[in-house]
Length: 210
Image (cartoon, rainbow, N blue to C red):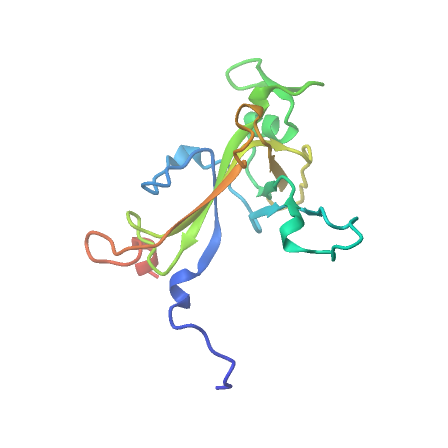
């Protein structure tokens, strides 16, 4: 093998895999979640992005070189989570539209009514959680969990429907700062290394059955 075609022997312990889950709520301290909090069945990739621009405060100073590290000022973070859902409920459409309400016409019929203004209640938290490391058991499995706060759909609601295909409903949720706690960046990331299960196994039952 070529000299520079190698991997760190511990790399397999730090890999992620699968598309993960979009959750309404998640407890990173225990890795537990309620299956009813799985927001959507998804297709394709689930994505997260966190970016921020830098302002060079020395750019206009004659006797200061550009891109001096001491004079860089970080602008607020821009964080978002996106993917494509193949399941949709009345509440999901409300989330995709962002500023809308659900009216219950009967036990089985609901109407989603868009409105012109945004309300604080239109913002919500979401989690993207996915497998991490080679130890992925049900109790002690490793995971990465990305928590976005005060999220709002920014691309509206659209769907693609085709013959003999699931409907595809893309979503793009952007995190927003809160005036009540303006120093708190509206996203956080957790990583938990996997450990062997109490019975000594290293993987979940479905993986061992493969």
